[in-house]
Length: 117
Image (cartoon, rainbow, N blue to C red):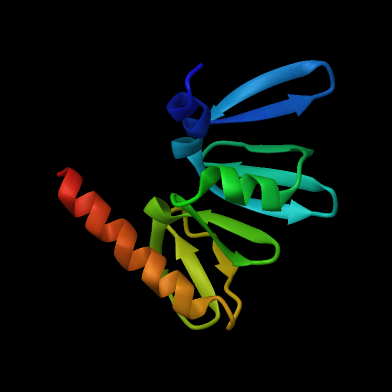
């Protein structure tokens, strides 16, 4: 796999099984203790991972809105000063300290999408 392909897949290790998940399928990632929970439209996948490592791997397509949440910017439907609502109607917290950077990231992601159309 080349470096670009590595960035589009999340490697999930569960016991002796390794699974490759397309990052476009992930709406958001939640940190629960030492585990990461990948929230997809039709399932959730729980495995041992650090959200900080996922954050660096998935940047700039994902944004860390809170210490416990990493969201896929393409699935943002709306947001307030306290939460982000995703296209599947789930809402996740947004830290007041990250709101300004989140707004910049949203603007940047919309410009990228507009240029790709």
